[in-house]
Length: 501
Image 1 (cartoon, rainbow, N blue to C red):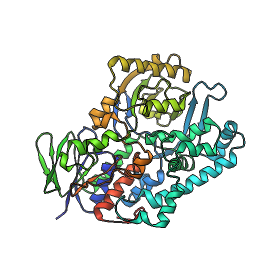
Image 2: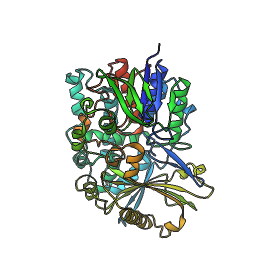
Image 3: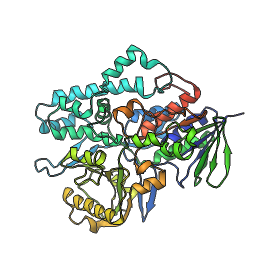
Image 4: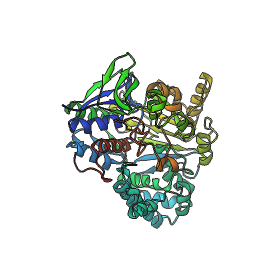
């Protein structure tokens, strides 16, 4: 008889682990509290505009390809991937000399720009990206697909030596300062840390591997939007028999004799299982679905944790197309360090924020009515802020005013025919996110080296998957997390990516 697995939550990690386990012969049921599958990779349509609600960058194509190959699937039959060029556009606020630059993730195209920003940089940037590429391959082969706490491999000298080569005790800020002088170059190389929810002054230099991902691999986009990834994972899951239950919040993980035996839904229904995997917010899983004596990561753990930022998001439907914007657009605030202080050290709505605008209609015009654009505008803000309606209205206007100046669009408000805002409380409500964080635990040194394990130390047969556990934040990383929990359940100890199931 097949072993029954219940997965709580249908984010990328939950769907990813479900497909691997269902293909391997388990009886898998995914339970989702919301109407849509996908977790933060959600979607909605309004007045002819289609909006991806969460993730919008398709990075690490090698990880996606590896994951689909594990399932004996050709990724190109599921996703119509377009390589973006430019990969993204950068707006430097208050910079009259060079206010707008395009990054192509093609060093031959990007070198003239880097030379303009820092004359003589060519040999340094080439060497820097070469090392980043080598470190990325090393990290992928040695650490990213390794289950923490599974063996004593970390005590082996060759593993320790490789770990030291990744500069774990140096920050990205200090590491980049040794390589480059131009503040604008350093900002371009640091922006990817926003995806990790971290401050460059506190993030280990090992994350320079993100630059290899950016510049050596490029940025892609699946036609139809990011939700196409969710659809593909659901299709593969159904092929292997995974069952889905939506609009079904879980209220409790049932534990008998220190062993997870099922879940109780909010409507009182009890579902039994041999194994439970939670893809729900890890804080919510530990502090709300388990009793205190069963918690590996109780409330006191979270009180000391460093969280990634929350976000203020505007979904805007426009009545026209905006030539000034590319597909991905980054506006860098003038005082970079002050912006990070306001996000992490002295929490407040940033005065001069860096923000991000996605215009998917640049690549995919079918996402809005003919001759129009839709925009996803994201402003990182500190988690845990309690904001009044007046606070939110005022900050919305502040961001629109910045867009008027930064994008040279003084009449931007007149173009808006549809608008929806999304704040910290929405992350709390929709995803049970601790303090409304958009991403989860930040990738500080401590939280990188000692990320929560993907299994409970107090409850047998209870596992965790997704951004809250190892290796961390991001869609491809959550697919690695899915492979790690699969390995954990199957008792596979290899530190390398699996070649087959």
